[in-house]
Amino acid sequence: MQYRRLGSSGLQLSALSLGSWVTFGRQVDMAKARDLLACAFDHGVNYFDSSETYAAGQAETILGEALHALRFPRDAYCVSSKVFFGAVTDPKPTQKGLSRKHVTEACHQALQRLKVDYLDCYFCHRPDPDTPVAETVWAMDTLIRQGKVLYWGTSEWPVEAILEAHAVAERHHLHAPTMEQPQYNLLHRERVEAEYAPLYSQFGMGTTIWSPLASGLLTGKYAHGVPAGSRFTLPGYEWLRQRYDLAPGSADMTRVAAMSRIAHDLGAAPAPFAIAWCLKNPHVSTVMLGATRREQLEENLTALDVVDKLGDATMQRIDAALA
Image 1 (tube, rainbow, N blue to C red):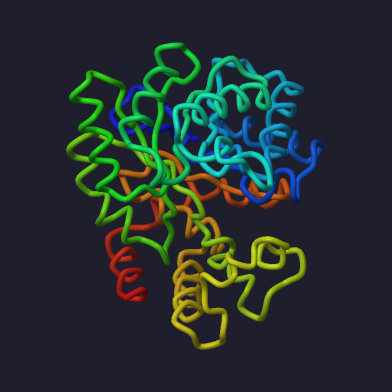
Image 2: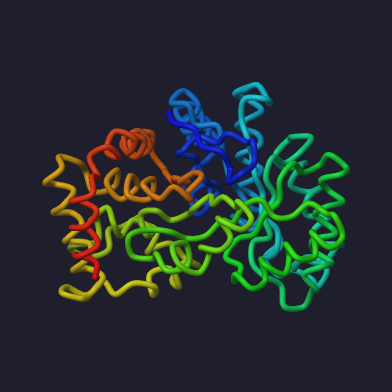
């Protein structure tokens, strides 16, 4: 395993980490969770991500109970939660958003579900138009000073809101956001590579990127339709399928086919190839993997062996195929 600093902070995260979105509580039960976590930890993974909203809190409950059962040393791994959407199906006004009240109570609830005394990373899952950015910054700073959170960050915030958060933090000598958690993959590049560019140089922010495989599209498994049991067939995730055009000959499917050909020429499977491409970006602190089976996770972890195969000529070929 390789380890990277979370931006300019001193926190060393494994270059590949394990997330729980869609999987834990929906496709992965307690037994499978323990197996996946044990496999990841044995391969050097030290970062596990979740959110209050994943499976209405069940993802964090399963993650917490699995970590507790495996008895990993608490100082040997990092765990994160995210706040915004709420942990119930139909949240009341004070059970969602980024108000001081919900940010604080959601943190306490996450600590209970995850069975830990503090969160290594705590993210604002989306921007909240109903809460001043300053209020959220103050709430996060308070949690850090109380020892309940070590680093806080944002997820899918527009750059203007992140800049405002940094300005508030600097003006009042508060803890500023350390990291962003954006989507990043071969089909979704603009925000990480262009919009967030000032954040890396000006504030030293890191990124914990999600969906490196575009919800499985970049594995090639949707080349001949939507297989049963895949993410695109899960109830409640219809919106996920609508993000991409799966019609034969569409721009998305043409790009996926081109990436598969380049991966084949390198002697790599499409999934590790796509993950390795994400790792080539020096502003990526960790690539979060999602898996339902041990063999799937083990294959994705081989992405570390593919990175060195992505030389300048290959990266140029990828850019040309995606253009």
